[in-house]
Length: 475
Image 1: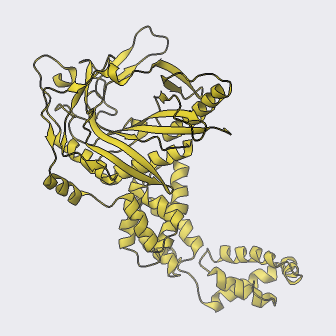
Image 2: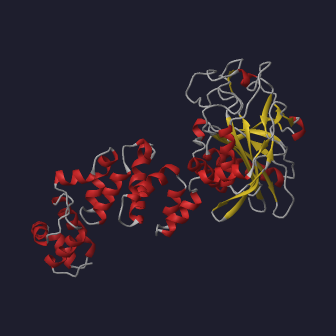
Image 3: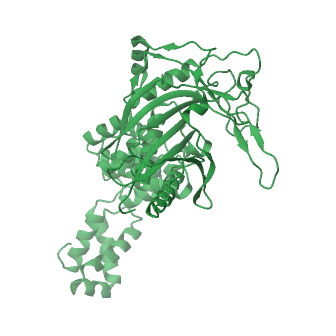
């Protein structure tokens, strides 16, 4: 993309964890349930019905806006936005227009500040389904009226990877606050992408909006494709047409859905059935007092405790992992970095191999603290600790396993010396290699001693005793 740069802005929708929908008493949780089973007359816009505002959704919206450093509007109101698709049967969406809940926030991502233009509340549309080969479409209105936060960034993002990382941080904030599951696979976090291409220093180019992005990976792939497409058009001296595009995941390319509407096409006007909201200082202070520690604050705390930046970031920006880590840390008297190593290496590998999250296992913070403590104190060797991990992940108490199986580390030099002498006597060729200067060959003998001790011998002591038995200087 030499000579050109991408300019990207994101529109992020978060499905809020409330019991009822944004303006109706229908249940807001619908994932996995039968179609059209969570629909109220208000969602359908039937004659004579009146919406009412979900107070908890407003609290969540204020909380999220505060987490992004936004200015909170002291006076805000809802608007009707014309909507001409069958998944919203009343033909309008209740949203917020020129008086959003929050404005002018920001989020730091990898040292770069991404501006947050606005945060507002609205209701979701239903879902249209188009069976392959059919001449009809199906409508599921379970989602219609579900409470949403929409967050719009400034056009400050410059790469697909930066966009992916930004979305990951937003998900972490929403989960840490407890306001949304923010799970893209369940449609509880969706992102639309606005992207244009220009030569550095020039005015903004013609942007397109990309929809139907159901994962962070899809966002990155769609941006990569669209940036290449627009760059090639501009190099050929052709124009980029403003439009709304869809993303074909299988084909790996965008396609035109419709010519982009302008703001005037939505015909916003104040919602006549809902009064304005006045957010006073007492309301704000109540919300601030209820806010938990944010990922950026966790990151700073982890760094201060001596955890390496790489590990601190992984832990801080994963809500379930950081919660688990903090609970284990309360029960752990060793080095916090050692505990972080377990979570970010061995346990992460176990989870990735099985496609699990930590809350899907029977591992408890207490048992992790016990396992890490046993190893750090030298009560068991690292090999024994790793061998026990699978059982501990299934809920076993590591201290009981060690006691029942006699797995405590052997530090008695005489007991280990007998194993060393046996292994040395059985491997004269390897001994000659070591004496001849091939120092690394001692690892083969070390492995044999460890196997015969069932992993309970201290490796450093074994290495020392092997060197003494062979008559060389320990490496």
